[in-house]
Image (cartoon, rainbow, N blue to C red):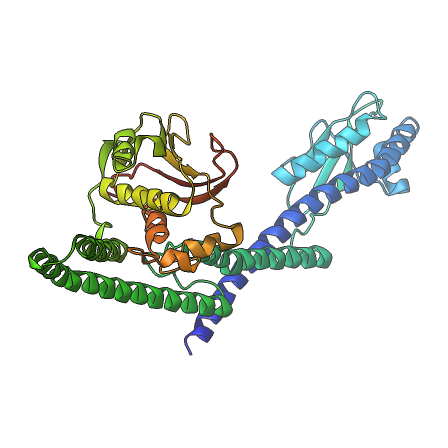
Length: 436
């Protein structure tokens, strides 16, 4: 019910814009046409006046001015001076007429304008005894109303301009904003605020549906985070009690080792739940040497199992979240790839604030058609990836940490050095003051 008045208001607004452009265009075209018509009229009038001037000068050699005026009907005036009063338009017309006469007459005659009820100019004739002036009437040109064809052209111009403004402001710009928001949602970045309701009725309806979808996604993400955080929190106490009771139980060495491994897997899953639920989103960003942070994540690996190629970089990051993301990627490469691994750190934009972390292994890696599936939470690409301590959140956590640093995850293929065939790159940049 509210869309019709808003649509009507928009139509009136753009209609007024079109009307203003039409009027301005018509006035401008009329002025240009009037100038052209003025030059053409003076050119035509110049030929007529030239004939009268030559005829009058020839006749004045034999007849007095009064007799010539009576016989030929030419409006002549005798005297050294004539009444003269000019206006801007008439002065310009007098100049154009004099220019036309001076092309064929020598010496060039004087042309004096006279404004008023009798609008015209006085043209001086060469007389043998006394000055004689020829009166040439020049009627004023009516600048309004404009020529009908010019008015039609102005209306078409104004209508076209109003239509272009309407398409740009009411259709193209809101749709482009909506497309950019959809691209962000597709990349996992939900807008913080609802899109403004602008544009045509159809565009407003699309915007409303998009805002509703975003609210539902935010609510679902919040509910999932609360659920995962609650599950992880509730599991901590039973795991701690089980570990304590396990230490008191009289189990064989093999059974005790397996039980402790199961508890460690539960703790790992619990930690991943907490991290994915947003436990690291509020971590304070700080400047850290990334090469040291990454080297610490390989401390549990054998010396021959990993090759470090780390460029010294100091960046403002969330160290705990970034370390957990790199640790998840290293664990995946160690468990599903082939040793040795290669850990690379580079500045992807020289002299910038970016960083690029690459982890290479010699395994077959993840197929390109299944890459997006691997980035989704709780997704395992095969049954073997459902082993102890894995919940399908490792890649999703790494992607989320990368997005929080303004970057993402990238699938790599090729020779990463030493025969390594598959790699994953985590890239990002220093977090700004607003993001901290």
